[in-house]
Length: 162
Image 1 (cartoon, rainbow, N blue to C red):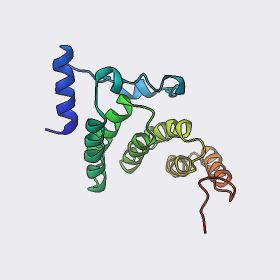
Image 2: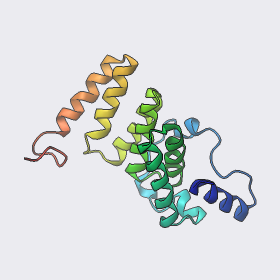
Image 3: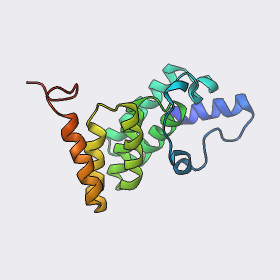
């Protein structure tokens, strides 16, 4: 049983519900933009999920990602993003997993959320560029690449340092 399975079982038993996660995550994500004013009101907090439990699930997700088990990794990163959508690393892991599963449109959605969470980071734009290239969407690929270039200027915080 995975750490996520253990957590879901605990939460389901505590709440007397059979399933505590959204059934259709893609519908949940549609037009999703984290509201920074509500950072304290997450499913993680509402459900009493500890940071230790979140770290354990993240370690498991990252383990599957490193083993190239992207479907398992995406499932875990997706759950983490639902529980606390304000953690950029969850969206990066989800986007990366989906991208490597060749689910490019879904990966772009995850990277889009990451852009809102880390607006000065060129990384999500770079990965979105790669996805748009794979999708044959040259216009959006070009826009993403321009953002990578803009955010990578020497005076920007994420620019390469020599």
